Amino acid sequence: MSTIIMSSCWPLQGLSVTQKAVLISLADQANDEGVCWPAIATIGKRCCMSARAVRTAMDHLEAVGILTRERRFNSSNVYVVTPAKFNAAAVAPKGKRKTGRAGDAPGAGAAPHAGGAPDAGGTAPGAGGEARGAGLEVRPVPPNRHITLIEPSGEPSLPAGLSAAPQVVDSETEVQAACRATWTAYARAYGERHGVTPVRNAKVNGNVKQLVKRLGHVEAPLVAAWFLTVNERYVVQNMHDLGALLARCEAYRTQWATGRQVTQTSAMQQDQTQSNVSAADEAIDILRARRAGNAQ
Image (cartoon, rainbow, N blue to C red; front, side):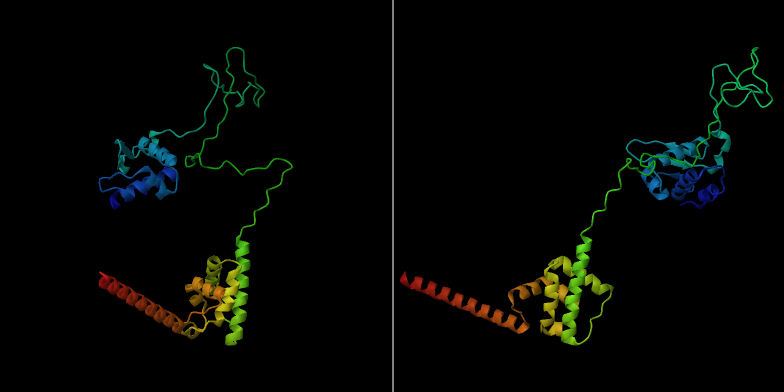
């Protein structure tokens, strides 16, 4: 950013809001010589406007001498910001436009509306060549108004006799109902085991919702209530916190469905049994190999 160029652009008057925004964006990216090369999309994103609005503003800045452009193929254009060359009178403002027949000019006493009606003084246009005023006043469009293709033209309307379509009920309602059922089952079982009501806060609500999404609307309340019967050391020490259930909810669901709780002791026993089975299998394989060797 060049503070020299930026400080020279801020005092400039006679520009619209859109034009000033584009100018300040260019000055913010220019060096001390006013040279920069941002993309049109980059300027539009920074100024919150469409690419068409950016180009229109650049056309005006170039017309009044503040901006010069060097167009390059397959690359960003090079822009030079020159606040000292600003000439507000270089482009005439868009004002009233007159329409009429060639050679006709509005008479001094002619009314501003078409048809050559008499003015307030009662004088009518003469036959000797006093021209009729046929000009129509056209209000200028504000310079900071840019209508793009994506700009809505108004609110959509419905045909006569038709009412608005009913809103579709989202499945979020079913999720909320399942969350309430899950929390109720968990809180009731928690009170029966620990004698107090569990704490409920935003974190707990999030855990309940995740539990419903992972286990389903039907099984989540059942597993949550069954979880209070788990006697694992870690779970008991944490007072059957919902976070512990959520961390291994699929495994606890399997234990609930099969009716078998896998404690640390039972897991060690199963591991030892599997080790013994593996050792026996290895001994049998060795014995078979020896017998095959002796037979040869």
